[in-house]
Length: 303
Image (cartoon, rainbow, N blue to C red; front, side, top):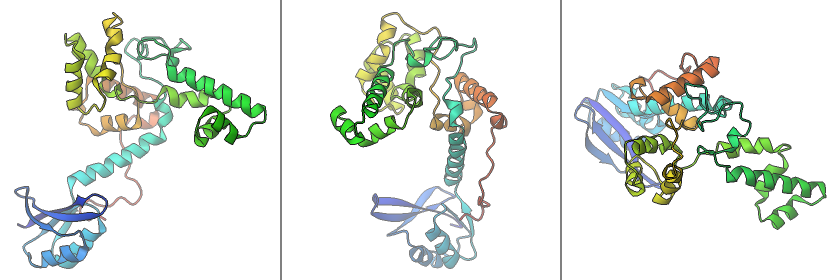
């Protein structure tokens, strides 16, 4: 067993952790240690001098344990943690360009995800089916109420009490001189169904119109909502308001990170075109490369 994999796992999350040891040749567990302390790991390694490579995460305890218990072994970072570290770096980079995500994607004919052209001023205040967004109206009304009360000289505490809002919410509205500052967040707030709109559109066009069956399908894909959410989303479809083309995905930092991290051949046509469009918006994204952040180490000597 010259190639050893080591990682921790929760016995009781947040309180008690143990260590699992894997034979990397067979990918099968060979032992479990009672904790994840460096001394415990070092003691086990002393009894197994045949270990030549230790594949681990970047935890300091496993680094120290391997250095003491198996000085003859090379330490390498495991693939999952390398990819996870890379994904975190990509997510930080995308987060710094969040402004580029506020503008919706366009389809091939220059129209936006909801079927309206960029010239339509009210485009962003409508949902995918062209209906006014209740959240937008509520945000406008609340901003007006709060600023009218401030002009009258009312304290933020009194405003929060009378409008039955938290102090944090009132502060946020009070510090926004223009309602548009708040609408950016309101308009682009993701909904549970967003990640599955394209899938539901494709399945509907294939002839599957049963909301319960479609709910079960997307729940297997990770959807955490219920059938009522799916029914509300499909109601315009049943009324004949079926988009000519599949709805375009909302842009979030997490979604764009996922597109970049995925193999190009696993991207759908919509995702590939969306990523190309984002790269065109931002010259820094043309290469789709992320420079290693300062302090990045050689994977053969993980920190």
